[in-house]
Length: 188
Image (cartoon, rainbow, N blue to C red; front, side, top):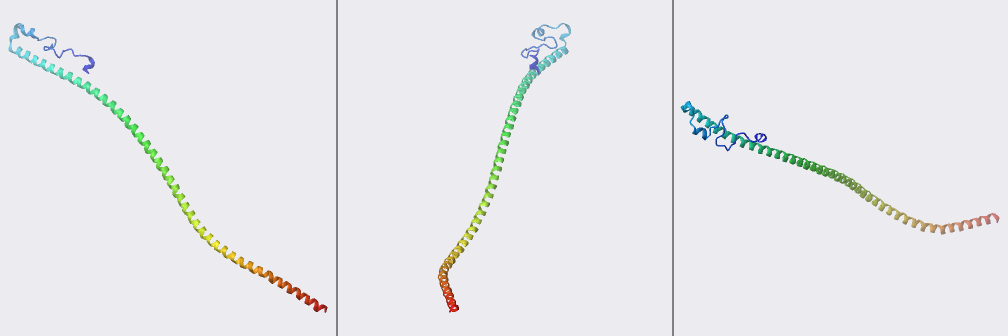
């Protein structure tokens, strides 16, 4: 957040940064303090202030480093979130494409299965037709045999019928002769 507000008031490269509005630089250390500054307690307090100033400077450097790290991490986080969204969109697209392919394959499989069932039904019909053909072929063979037998019988009957014509003629001739004989018997 420090990077958004601008640079810090205290320069990190300043060897003697100001402490609470006063600067304990070399000029202040070179000039002897008036009066009670020579007392050892003041020197200890001054040393503590210098040490504290060094600690603050180190903390400021650490803080700036952490702020820079924080900004870099935020950028990385935003970049990672962007990449995650892109990967999520790509994964969603891939999943939808896969689902579409699976759906198309399922439809194709259902179509093939329906065709297979139709082929199986047609095969059953063909098998039934073959069985019917065999039955009809056997019946035809039997009928052909019977027809042959009937033709032979017809030929015999025709032969017999041709013979009956001669017999009829003979019978007719005999009948006429018998009639002539009757007429003769009655008229004689």
